[in-house]
Length: 170
Image (tube, rainbow, N blue to C red):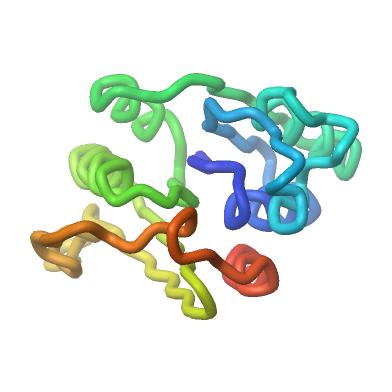
């Protein structure tokens, strides 16, 4: 399950499709926007205005017609997210909002599923793997604790497109 098909989710989806991962489940409710194309490489200018999940699905199947791509084009509440997480083997958090990251973490903890979480801002990036299904394994919230204050955002602080490509290919 890839949640978020922006700057991080784009290379993640492309590399997984190219490597022949059997089924990809894509979740994003946003639309392709021209101003984002320099860092959201799974999309194209011919798909501006299209749902990101549909744009990505089209590109991924063109890259590897032997895979299966399922789309979830709406924001998920906690219960819906838990159902999606329970149905997959691995969750990739490619979102840029802390509240969403924490909700994804909670679903992965409840379902005992591994979570790969990546984040990038300005010229800094991080990637972590959490598997709360393993004994004594910390989760995302365990690692970061209770975050106070207003978190930095890509919208306000910017992010280098090249950095997203590096992070998304890991």
